[in-house]
Length: 278
Image (cartoon, rainbow, N blue to C red):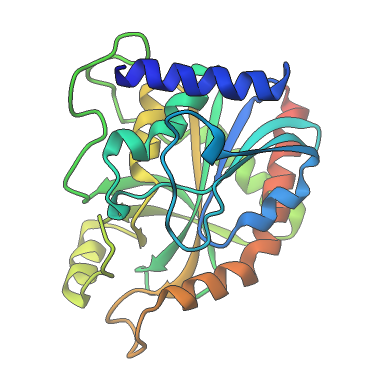
């Protein structure tokens, strides 16, 4: 069975479990952000272990569930359990959920993540709307045989991050009383944190925040013509900016602390999308 067939078999399982429900927006939850799914009305939870061919997430703070339902009236598919390249997954595995969502006809992909702050003006807990990225992972998820049934061979990346969604995010933040900024996300493969020299390089390159995820998902979502936005929460200041030792426990602690504000932002954004009829 080839990759396309595996994606379609997984999709058929999900559609059968969803019993006619059709999401408009897919939201991928970053480390420690599972509580955002509590905002979904009448949720239907699908354990990804039951879905054919669905790769298993092993990263801390990623539950391995799809939650279907309405958030502020908007039909959403919320993915609790991102897949990371550093777990040993192939890029096909890492982006498998996005392929499934795209083939389901989901129109929008919204990613959330934990990041390290590179821009000196950022502080722990700040929320950054990503408007561009730097792929420093050393690999691209589109490498390999092309599949014309889901994307062109050479997708343009100029307008990957939807200006319309960024504007709606900014409006949603104002209405929710949440301060946000905009920035560029640079992705390394991990799982080791970056060195101070790598962070200095990233700052020179124009990056605002750094992480180990999201970019492969964004590349695939863009290739599948899904309108895309990413919301990043600064969980720590990047290597070399303080004398602190970076740990995953710190990241999860800070993300739990920020989850309430991010939940409010997501709810406000879903309300905006519904009001705009998008």
